[in-house]
Amino acid sequence: MKNVLDMFRLDGKVALVTAGAGNYGRQMTLALLQAGADVWVASRSLEKNERFAEELRAEGYEKIHAAAYDQADEKSIFALRDKIMAEHGRFDVLVNNSVYRATKDRWYDDIEFFEKSLSINGTGFFMITRAFGKIMAEQGSGSIINIGSYMGDLGADDYLYAGIDGMNGFDGPDYFFHKGGMHTMTKLIAGYYGPSGVRCNCLSLGGLFNNQDPRFIERYEKKTFLKRMANQTDIMGMIVYLASDASAYTTGAVIPIDGGYSAK
Image 1: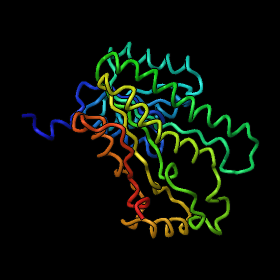
Image 2: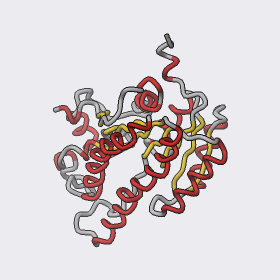
Image 3: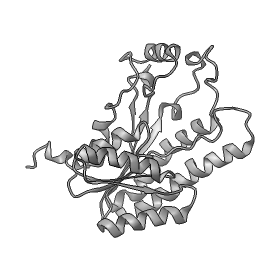
């Protein structure tokens, strides 16, 4: 019987983390690299991705690759897919981490900003999922990991932001909308690709500490069972689990990683 720790290894696997050089993306990328995968990071900014890749290479991680793509453009998605396939001849793990915040969190922004957000975070999310999902389905194996949010399950909590300039619990209606949709789409995607051996799960994340206003941090921590915000390693274990054979019988799940925030 296979050793359980070996089941978490990703040697020979190829992964893509969209927005992999971002705040949450950095630890996801590092986790997949440490588990043995070849990892691509991609977003609209090639320069940012290259800088991050160079940082990782300097730490000894040679299997990191940087690229650029536009999630609103299906041709750009196909070009990224073809580039990865030309390099490796296979594809195993898609981490849908990209998010576009077009509205600057204002309820009454021009509707064009809401529509632009949905074209990337809704339509674009679907386009990249089916582009890479087709490759994995033809291959007969793979894992899709969607990065959701507790805001996809819960209503707004203005208590967290009261009295803090520029912050409002009811801002960003597009974000609530597309994260809720992502959670439901995870189950649909899991059902569609399941017969082909491709799994799809979603992580419903809580707040990541990023030097926010001290009042926000104090209030948020009071709302969680663990009394703290997420740190720079809290997502790593679950990313590797969902990407690896350790989760071979897990699909269609929306898993909260929020310190207990949504369990209250």
